[in-house]
Length: 254
Length: 160
Image (cartoon, rainbow over all chains, first blue to last red; front, side, top):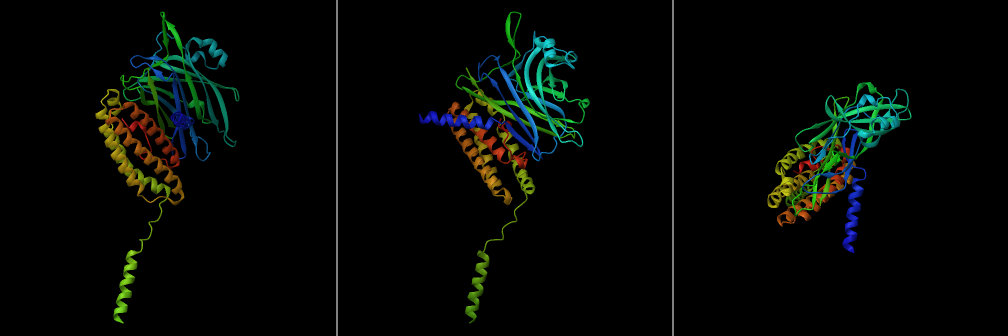
């Protein structure tokens, strides 16, 4: 009974620590990254379908206006596999200036995730205000390269943004990298504050059940838990500064 | 009489010698951070070198090899904590830094236990301790978030 209580307390402590994600600060700017995947128990020797949740944000310590972000980079480890074989794609131009309902109507077959975003808008001589946007993520291609096309819509003020995240594979701890350049035509006013995205898509291709994201927990038979670098978010600011944070998570082998 | 003067002089000199040196002026937070980062940088880099491939070693069940790497990292971590804890602290941050050092000492204890468990061929226990080590590192980072440490902050990626 005492052991159970101790285990529950440790678990509660771990959950409390990850509730707001991990943070790093440079100057007056704080970057936050949180996330996870489900299920946590994964096969040791082959990938299985997973859903992935990522939350990232920026805030200032002194409540000054957030700096403008020009580039967002999200890295995930090589043991997470993005597979879009046989999954329909959505072209960015088909969902430009569309409502959420219309974007879904046009590209539902390519939907791979949903989420929301908060941006801070600072118009000169007016107090800053927050804009909330609903996000849809679609499987796509940009100049022949695999991409995640993010469609964001806010109702107040009515705004639609379509942002492609290009998928790169590269050696290193975070073998899969999603990169988005925030275009200058977004204007100087909206400042990225935070976003959260859930990625999950199962589909059938040539009679086989597939998943957009799969992962394994590659551990030897004697080791039931593995700890790995789960994600890294890097923000490049308009003044050239970069701020990043990486997080670790654990998986259980089954 | 001259004997009394001599004794008085001797006592005065002895008292002066025994008196504590004037306390070093407390640094500002920026000075403190700059001083600590200089100490932490080589240790963080040494940790990275020492721990290279440790996670792969655990995955490949080379627990004795991983234990040696963790032992090295423990020595570096312990030495670093000892060195930075001797540095004069900004007076406004005393309580916050006391908390930070408590977490750092806890992390050092976890590193020692991880090494012992790996040596004893108990990977599951070692991995559970690694989870606690990471969790404590994140708590430590939160305490000194405002300091903007780079080399002195906990980064899991430095551990293999």
